[in-house]
Image (cartoon, rainbow, N blue to C red; front, side, top):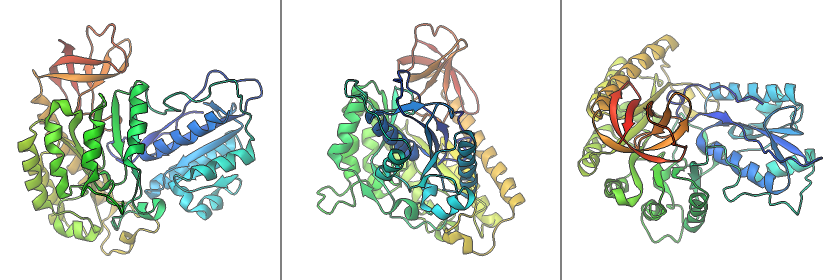
Amino acid sequence: MRPMSTNPPDLRPDRAQAQLVTSSDRREGQPSIGMVSLGCPKALVDSERILTRLRAEGYDISASYDGADAVIVNTCGFLDSAKAESLEAIGEALQENGKVIVTGCLGAEPDYITGAHPKVLAVTGPHQYEQVLDAVHAAVPPDPDPFVDLLPARGISLTPRHYSYLKISEGCNHKCKFCIIPDMRGRLASRPHAAVMREAERLVGAGVRELLVISQDTSAFGTDWKDREAKAPILDLARDLGTLGAWVRLHYVYPYPHVRELIPMMADPSSGLLPYLDIPFQHAHPDVLKRMARPAASARTLDEIAAWRADCPDLTLRSTFIVGYPGETEAEFQYLLDWMDEAQLDRVGCFQYENVDGARSNALPDHVAPELKQERWERFMEKAQAISEAKLEAKVGQRMTVLVDEVDDEAATCRTTADAPEIDGHLYIDEDYDGLSPGDFVEVEVDEAGEYDLWGHRV
């Protein structure tokens, strides 16, 4: 079963390549399930949890269509292009295997799926683990072996063993007009603090060196608890995660006022919390943000960014933006470019606005022509690339700790504290990298910089 292709992650920030896992010790007659996982890291975590449950019940995990008794397709439904890709993945699985169970965000529209592929066995919505398991049981009954330890300490992982996504909540309370995630995944539902810590401790104990904290709205973690004592529970969670001895990286952080209280932790190397914030700004012009129904104001955001960097000079800021939003004028777009010059964000992704079935933005007037959206996207990315290149050039000569992701015959591919997997750049060590392995921390000095990547040598 080959991985499905996707757009480059820095262009589609909420998309990740399809991931597949396999097990090497299949018993004779043991039922086998395949998984095609599309979408963002939050969906990837859902896939991991489903596969872990299936493995514990005695199922083998197949990496090929013909080796599987049934295939689960975990879909993405965030954009129309993502929906089309999900339908293509379902069609391929039906053609190659025949027994297909569909889950994920697109599963919130079962008629849309069955209208295109009426032969699917079942359709479930996002994070409906029990319904997925029920569908698998109906299609391929389990055959557990009570004498075999089927569940490793970390569970089934779709990422390399040295890093892992840690999902701390589901759903979102925002009402952005271009987004239907609250309709698909519901309102904010935070996991208990203790449950998140138990999972994090287990992951670190199994060899994970970096925890990537994800949710739809990480800053809002715990604000849905009726009996909470802390005003901002994410602060306590970040502090506790930082004690585990692994890198802790925060994604999908809305710039609420309490975020500034995270910055001193990020400035302290002993805290474990990386000086990295992934904040989905989406745009800068106040009128566009108002049409988006976004809870942000660009002028105050620039002040916040300046304050954060004053407290933590090494802070890396990553964000994503939408160009060509309905009604966006040339003046509003130029405002965004000027804002970028002031904000000097380190890592930036951008995508062109698309209508999504059910999104309120579809009804807005003055939609931007496709060729103009493309032209603005190119101008935006040229600006972002120039900023990135200048910032990386300033790192030449610096010493830093990097995490090794991969080692081959040509180089060791590593990441700095400024680089999240899949979406950011790399640091390459192309000499004297013998003996390095994925998951190793190594000290380097930066020798050369490119548009998005660095090269260095061990020190």
